[in-house]
Length: 266
Image: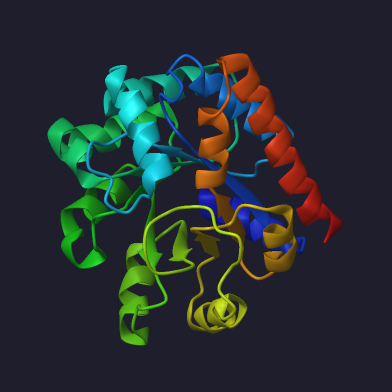
């Protein structure tokens, strides 16, 4: 099932997708597929898999440090794709969004990346630092292999640019809930609900929202306000703070189960 199909199917049931984010290779690449399976079992509807990068300018310190740990162990794009492919061969079916910067794709080669990502079982790709205006070759090649694309919108995106973002996106539009970098926060923007309503009135594609969502109260408050809620830094920090891989998997699973229960209670 595609990202768009998965989101629209949940919307048809008046449900909101829960979308955890983890950095591949943190705490190590052998643990990542086990984490993905645990998150899916705990209630994740889709999962974002981050490719570690040396200069993750859109990410706050928690995810920056996760990238540093993963890179120190030799995690790279091809290894992440190989891990996903093996996971798919084992029967893992949860839709996956590959979250990356453009440099790892450029180093591998755009056409080669598209083929390997498709063969691995990636559903969609979000390239954080690639604006749609500069993505013509990228869009053409991903379309050829039937990989979905996801582009970013933010509170500062002018209305006239939203149409460009939507035209470039085939899976969904990712709305950044606030200016700045990723990171958990205690309170969401007071204007976020209104911002999401306005955004969705202008777009036909499903909208997912992230940056700052971290508590059961957040997901309860935002349930039904977007097609999906992305939880990243708060999950990555729980994994990082765990003393070993087994504990990390259990803590991550419990956390996602708690958020899913909050969504379902709504």
